[in-house]
Image 1 (cartoon, rainbow, N blue to C red):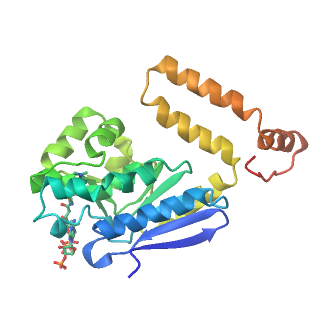
Image 2: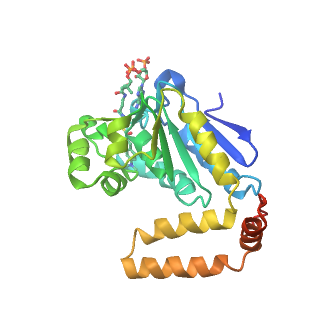
Image 3: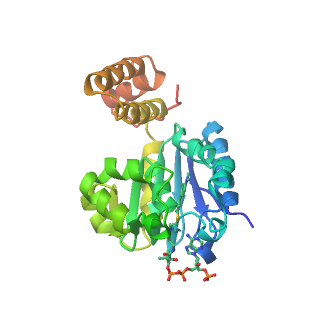
Length: 256
Ligand code: DAK
């Protein structure tokens, strides 16, 4: 069975659907490897300008597959080298949108937080319940959650396993936008289509500078921003966009 189904709902837009519905899209090593392969492939595909990841209406993903972890120890976990699967998503230079209905728990919430934009249907539930299993997040759950929602809400969720609704996650800053139940994918496609119509080099620089800037002090981050902003003045798409504005026509961009 294909565990990650790829689809192309619009020009330049790829949609990856996690496909283990019987187990709430629990992330086993096979699914993780397929997801990595898809990200590697889409990262190299010059026709793709935005990537959506989604699940189904019950679950985006209920986390790592607990049945596959109960009997294994630290050595085997390390040998799995799941990090290279996450790295394929983390290092993707194209915009990534998570479209979430139902549960995004544990590794599922961590996967959502790898995305640049998170769209949630009203039914979405976010949480890091690893503590209840005697473990803790290992793919950014402590670090990305605290950056998204702040120390005190993150500590509460991480230490109790308490979840957040879509509305709470939006108020806390974890989610970009909340839409009606089961409308997350439609909204994500709308957003992806709008991003795909933008000059791709500008989008890529915005993503890179924003993420890199979060890791350094403000002066360094502002310098990174200026350097990237100068660079974009050299692109063909900058001329196309500005001439389009001046001449009142709708430009299309080549990505050069
Ligand atoms: N793993 C395996 N099976 C799962 C699963 C999971 N995470 N979540 C659900 N399932 C399975 C259930 O066992 C059930 O299977 P059957 O009994 O039908 O065979 C089926 O999916 C339907 O589940 P439920 O009957 O429970 O469905 P409900 O709608 O009632 O509840 C639920 C849905 C998502 C609230 C519930 O299933 C649930 O609480 N699931 C577990 C959520 C959870 O604890 N997630 C955290 C997993 S631990 C690391 C990196 C990452 C991680 C760890 C280390 N390193 C780098 C070291 C990540 C860890 C995790 O994510």
